[in-house]
Image 1: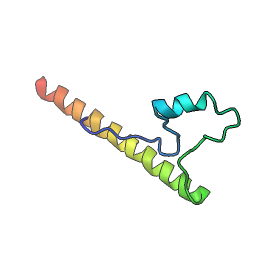
Image 2: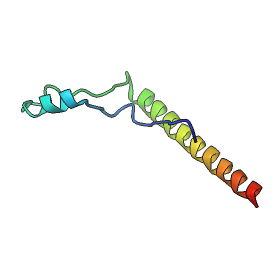
Image 3: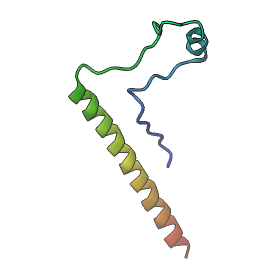
Image 4: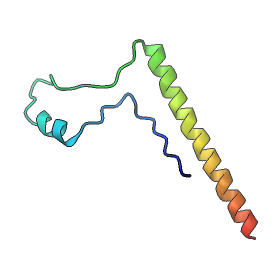
Length: 72
């Protein structure tokens, strides 16, 4: 449970400064997103990140189960 994995590499993560700049960006020129060269590459990276999170959830659940059964 100590590791924090994320699955948001294709999503823009703006800072406070860029959020304030977007208030005056009426034409969307400031929009910037993380990109991949090809759609299959983006899909592969997204699936890899999703399965890492599934694995982390399973690991956390098994650890909690072991802890709860050892206390009994």
